[in-house]
Length: 203
Image (cartoon, rainbow, N blue to C red; front, side, top):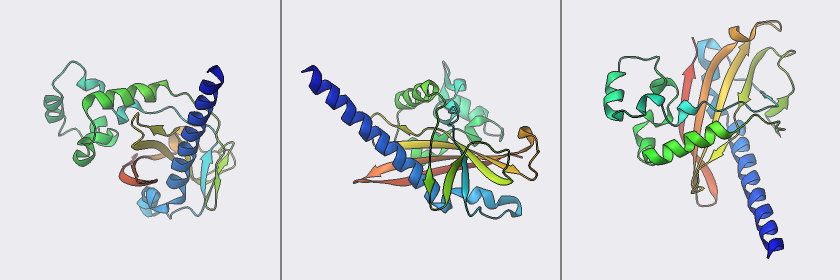
């Protein structure tokens, strides 16, 4: 019986790993995910360079602390004129269509899951993307990605990206932030399909 559970655990881990790799592939192989990089008269990169360590999740993607112990609808009304509030640039469920797929309880669970993920090394390589160890010898665009999150029901997947742009090799990190990209996929049959994308240009 113990051997059965060990095999089952290994099979489940392999499946989750396979889904994670598929989300990375779908994200970086689809250039339409990166239209943000064409803002401010820039050109879409031919190759997407990705730092080989994942970043911590921005938990505001799933749930805002402003909602805790408060009437969520009242909070939303109170921030409608504050374009810099995370509700507008980070919170995925400000998209009212996407919002209908998830209860508040599910959003809070995703938030908790995102906070539990730690940075880890990754190795990605495709026809138009690859991981790099450092941005030191890079000019132009490069990206830092989160680890994908798969919802408990295995129906949705989320990935969060930070976009950097270097004009010179020695440019300071704080001067290179360009934007963020949050992407949501839904399982449709045996395939994943992007159903939402949230871009934010950092000015």
